[in-house]
Length: 67
Picture 1 (tube, rainbow, N blue to C red):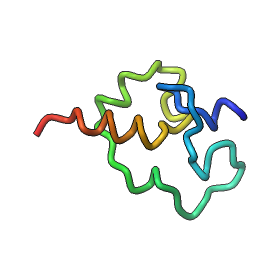
Picture 2: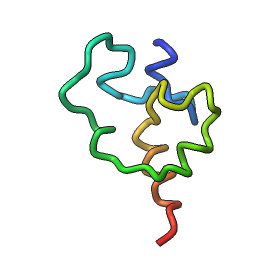
Picture 3: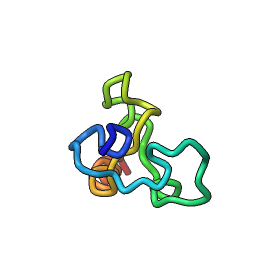
């Protein structure tokens, strides 16, 4: 499994259909899961925009957003 296929937060598989793909994909769960910008800023700079969070981390982090 490549680093692109692992969540940068927990290291588990991210199940992202575009992870490691050369060509863009048409749809993935990550296209429909909002994540607050401040959550992404918590990731190390070298991992931002390089790999996808897993669904569990995306949901858990998204729940931290202030109302």
